[in-house]
Structures are given as C-alpha cells and as structure tokens.
Image (spheres, rainbow, N blue to C red):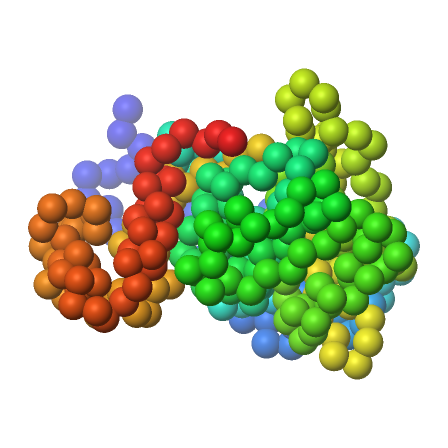
Length: 337
C-alpha cells in the first residue's frame, strides 16, 4: 500500500521528531586542540597508563580512533580527567606520528603484525652465553626487525662466567653492532648496570630476549626503584626460562642524562611475516649502492645479484655480504636454536 501520493515533494514528507533532543550523528570529529600531551607507559586489557606532566594517568582509547591502537612508547593526546587521582579515567583522542616501530608476528605464517614498542631509539637484544644456550637465529630475526623498524641494535651478552663470548662476537663482528658482555656476579654487584647504562643515556631503549637470559634481572639493576618479578629457573629439559614479564613497560632511568628502558615479555619466537626483505639492505650502507645493477625484485642471493661484483671490485668486505644474506635468509627459515 502506497503511503504517499504518486507525485510528492519535500513538503509532503512528514519527519519524525527527535524525542531525545540531541544532535544527529556526524562524521566530523573534534580536533581536540587543547588536549594534553603524554607518553604511553604500559597497556593492560584496554587501559593505558600514560605519563602527563609528571603525573601517571589511567586512560582509555577514544572510539573515534577506530581500530588504531596505542602501544608503549606512543606519544598521545589526552582529554578528560588528567588529575591522576584514583578512579579517574582520561581519554586518548590522538596518536602522534611514530618515529620508529618494533614489530613482530607470532610466526612466519601469521599475517597479523603486532607493534611491540613505538618511538624507541635502540633495541637491546639480550642473550645468555650459556644456560640457556645462545640462539643466533633469534638474534638475527631481532636484528632484521630493528633494521626494518628504524632502531639501532645493541647486543647484550649475559652469563659470561659460564661461557666466553668469542663465537658470538665472531658471528656478529662484521655488522659493527655495539655490544656489552656481563656476568652474573656483575649483575649482582651492579657493575653490569653501570656499563650498560653508558649506551642508554638520553635514549629510549627496548629490551628483548627469550626467557631465562637475565633480561628482567638486568632491567631491575638499571631501574632498582621499579623492580619487576624475575624468572625462578631455567628448565633443564628445554633450556628455556619461564615467562615472568607479561606486558611491556617503560621505565625512566634516573640521572641527569635521562633515558627510558622498555622491558618487554620474553619471546620464544620472532616472526617476520611483515618484513619486506628489500628494506633490510638499508642497514648496510656500504652494500646498498651496489644494488643499482641488480635485476628487478632481486633477493640479493641469486646468480644475477650485482652485489657479488660489487664486493669482488673491493667496494665492501665479503663478510658484510655474507652477514646480509644470512639475515635475509633467516626470514625463510623456521625459528630454532
């Protein structure tokens, strides 16, 4: 049954009154120009702890941000109750552009990438020299993620009282990566923290490593006023520790030089499904010019790769090309020891 006549105009159409008296929905979002600036310190089940003007604020993400999520290290804009008092909740209305991102996937077949830390300057890759044994492939994967995300790597080797660092240093020496070697005794006396701190001053450093390598113990030594629970033992069968850090947390370094340490949960795998191999070459400035003669979509590990001739002509050390190809190949290998 036709409700209106055949020829209708706007005057003929009846509109239903808005009983609530509120404004209709709009796609125009407020700019929040008066929002306060803050930094995300940790994320826990949808609630984000942020630092705003020296105060710790609990906040939630505004619906207008859609599926975009804030992570530890993000610089954000907040509105609402910024007093930091108990039972108050602010709202994150904007996530500022990131200068760097550390991403990983659960495995190499997982298309969903997870941003672990944003805006970090440096990635400290913590590995034990024994108990548990070093896992070079995991280190390689962390290096690839650091190079891809715009972070400078730092290799931190622990438990040197159980095994010497010579083999690892030989493996990564040609990458010109800064490193620190520590022992269990130095961790207990605080000497290790003193030497590691020299690389952290004035920078945001994310710490990553698999369980049992002493990562959280080192973080506790660096920031003793904010101690985190550490692993109790390393499994004698698997050679791996138990996860004790369950969420990433940014902690400020005391002292005039400042800086931040971001402790992340221990990892058992570091998927690189999101990594574009062509970006890894940017971490090798001595090799990158040689790719000009490479065929299109060159993997840099094939017969027609121009890097072989570039190295043969003396433009770069052959060991550097070997290191590049080892890092690129790690994306194609299954994670293991």
